[in-house]
Length: 294
Image 1 (cartoon, rainbow, N blue to C red):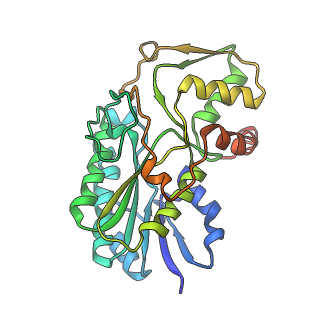
Image 2 (tube, helix red, strand yellow):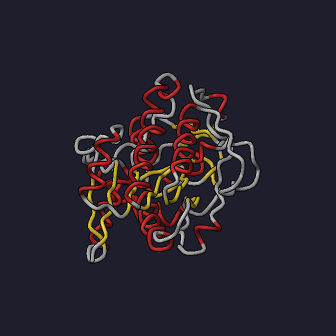
């Protein structure tokens, strides 16, 4: 008998990537893809109704407030989506026995480390975005539901707006591109993350408690490194120049170091290298960029 997976944030990068791989699991799962037009996750009663009416077995929360700089002034809405809505999903999961997978962020750390962050390392967010995402993690644990919290970073895909598309646009419109070279982390292809979330269901979906995982592609690079490789693989000629973070001030503080330890995730999932994943998906990203497909 098919199990039912309810996906929130279906119109985002991760949600669309989950839609892309859903046919691979058609014999095993029935997917319900929702976004704000079909399910308001800030409304607990609405979340409860759908979870119960559809006999949901798994919840994947791909919805979030992700405008990192805007969150510094849009505090109430950031917490509404990143804490209250998450608490609603956790409450419904607890009541129905569903397994909740929630996607969190490297921004729950302060970025002052020099070795990859482990899942149990102390958190210390420095931005409203990071604090609101950590509040969502806490709400899940306090709810008593079963589930997994998956922290990721530097997400990109053929869908929506992201760093890769921005670099392609700047390469076509600027004489040169300045990119910060003192922030270290690793990109995450949304399609790889989507496949990992399905692996979490297979690995942990019947277990109790809340697990924490870290997932990015493998590697350790700067934004400058990432931009340089995008431009190189795309065959663009626009020069990319390294600059310090101090030359590119933003309302929200970015973690200077946000490499995540992947050892627990690698135990049951083969994680691709960042450059390998970029090479695989860049032609589709370029096509969507050139044809204004979002």
